[in-house]
Length: 108
Image 1 (cartoon, rainbow, N blue to C red):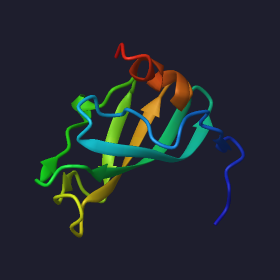
Image 2: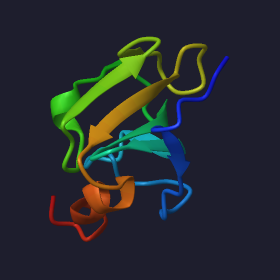
Image 3: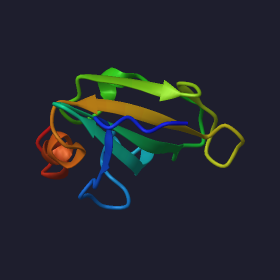
Image 4: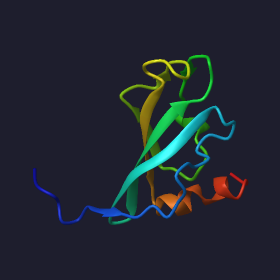
């Protein structure tokens, strides 16, 4: 594999867990962030905190995101069961910490 010169890994300047979902149903843990020109992409591990199945909707994400997707799926099994985690990839025009700032301040 080759590493493109215009894409580089960046620091996230955030906490181990972040308030990516307002209702607390999901624990969100940033994994890694990359930047190129005026966009950043951040991978965030998501874990279901509820004893029921959840279907994720990118419109429920807290933050200033240009796009978001879930991999490998957008359906989470109940907490503690196989399939209770997935990864979100969020795209922002600014850094991950800046895009998430309103959520941390309890505004967004």
